Length: 365
Image (cartoon, rainbow, N blue to C red; front, side, top):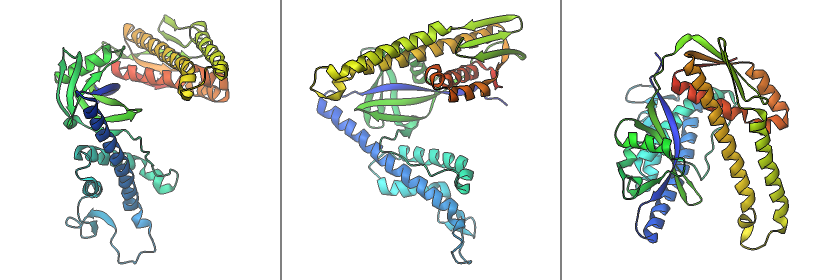
């Protein structure tokens, strides 16, 4: 039976909600300590999981050795003194006790076990290398780490305690979607699933994963809409006699190339910019055009995918077929210009997400 809910991830900036600069610095240092312990714990857990899984491959062990990965109390051949899941958790909890919340360690352990089990056949065949985690890892948590979530009208932000640290949200300019999700979460209308905290350049970002109900539309599974993605027209879709072209080459590609040309002119002028205060200041204008292009493309593809799904809903098409996509993927890989400027994969991702949310079955031909 198809699930009536789906998971949706949003990036939300958090600010430490303390009065003095010293208190805020101390709280940020604590978060960086948790990140460091999470980085170490993740590498330890994945190493232990691999050794446990491959121990039966150690053929040079004596024949009498037991190697069944089970609790010895429950299985006479078991080599573990506790359950397998608990064994890796205890390794990191004993080592980092008091240095990081156990909720974070538990979520790291559960996440890595699930990921490892999915990729286990490839590890066993030698087709995939073992995961390696870097120091800037985003560490996971669940709703247990969010205490007292509510909207504070004076601060115009959602405030809560992230474990022991008081924080508030900064939703930025495009806040409507995030504000609605946070409002529903605070009211208990939706649930927060395993999410992550990402630290970057002294800033705190919460990669919040919400579990929401899918939209309820009157759709007919036998009614199909056929869509084609291309560089000439981003999307052309038809259902029965109805047909719609979404976007044009001039609107999307030429505008993007104009931004790229402006960025190139600025790059050429960087050499003659005023020196001093480092590379970041000299390349500030280049970065501005880079962000401008990224935001423009994301906005256009969001609009195109939204219009496509609205077309399907309007004509009650319960099935959306994307035609000849494998051929176009091959062309995109061969043609550097197309691959660099079309953003094909990002558009596919947005279509897939919106189709799932609307309850439309997506088929790629």
